[in-house]
Structures are given as structure tokens and as C-alpha cells.
Length: 292
Image (cartoon, rainbow, N blue to C red):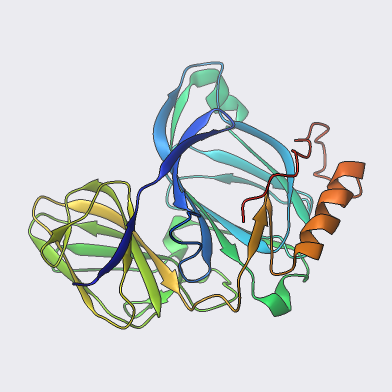
């Protein structure tokens, strides 16, 4: 048996976009550096509508957006502005503080579109969580991939399966998209201490155990796992080294020290925060309820 636990997601809505969120949960706070995992459900937007998440802050984390369908406009307080398309990577590291917006581009608002993809948060190592913010964007053909015996692997971030992504992760990380043809198999090695699989579509099994669609299946540490797909499947595989201590989460803030979170809340509340150029609107600080 190579399954440690199965985490069913909860359904939420972000900026009008429905998502499924298995991480964080009471059962599992993190897998490697991953502390947040959002599956952006396929969602059609009629002409005149789209996703719109106004200016908001982050500390102590990196966000990674990877789309299967649709497009998002990313803007941040560093002056970055990128149109993120399917197969590309939008990688933002908050450090001591950054603000950004995410929205459907204007032309797709006019024409209508569908959005579908993944967004994850990775906690920064303690030694770097108060560092300088940064933003990187990678086109689809910059991400390494391999195809063998009916399995195509795309290394979105980190390393594994003899592939190394150019995304500048801050700790040992595994983030891959796995596309399996009918009847194919894949051996998941134990090269990363913590690993989990999210079944996006199709049918797959770990050993003799069927995977639950849209649930995060956490694998046992130190054990190789055999993945098989009778009819074909698409999965996300995440993992990496364990965090260097527990993390607290409050709204959009992640930190190893609650003092850093309280300072960030106070700064955002009074407007003492880097601003996204050309953006006047912002999401106001919610109540003190915590995600920790």
C-alpha cells in the first residue's frame, strides 16, 4: 500500500471563478513546499464577463499559475505585466511583500472565454521569507518534457524523472503534469521525500487502488509507487522536501512567525504597501479569522 491519505477538496469561489481546494486541510497542511492547491474548474464566461481578482497582498510564499484553457492577465507591484496562456508558467515570489491582480484580459471579456487550470502556493524557506519580491514568466516551450511508453511528463517546476524546470524554486520541489495514454504505466520514484497526486481527468490507479477524481492522494514517504491508467488520464504530481518548520496562514499571508503576519495585516490595512501601477481598486483586509 503506497497511499498515506486521501484529501477530498472543498469547493469555493474566487473572483467569480469556481475552484476545488484540497490544500490546506485539517488532515494535511503541506506536501513538500506546497501549502495551497487550487484546481480552477473549467468555467465558461459569457461575453461581458470574466474572472477579476483586484489588487491584494502576499508575503512569505511563491504563487504558480498553470492553465489548460483560457488566459489570465497578471500585474504586480514590481511593474510586471504578463498575459498567461495555456502551458505557460506565471511564477511570483512575494518575499517581504508584493501586491498583484489577476483578471481575464479585456478582449476575452468582450468575446467570452473559458478558464481552466491550476494555481498553487509554495511556502518560502525561513531564511528567504523576508527577501526581495520577484516575478518570472516562462513560455510553454521552455518547460522540459519527455514522452515514453505512452506517458508524457511536463516538469512545471522543480526536478524529477531526469527533467529540471527553469522555474527558480527556493527548495527541493516536484511539480509535473502527467498525461497517460490508455494502458500506460508510470513508476513514481522516491527521489522526493513528500509526494502527492491529483487526478484531473480520466482514470488511474496506484497499485490496485483507484484514485478518486479531484482528490489529493498523498503517497507514503520512501516508497516507490506504480501508477497505471486503463483508459487514459491527466494528473498533477507535486512534492518536495518537507518544510523547515510549521507555517501559519492568514488570508493571503504565509509565514513561519505570526508576528510577520500581524505586521503585514497592519501595513495593508493602512495602505503602507507597494501598489500595482495603474490599479486603484483593492481587496480590503478581512476580519481576523485565521487559516492556521
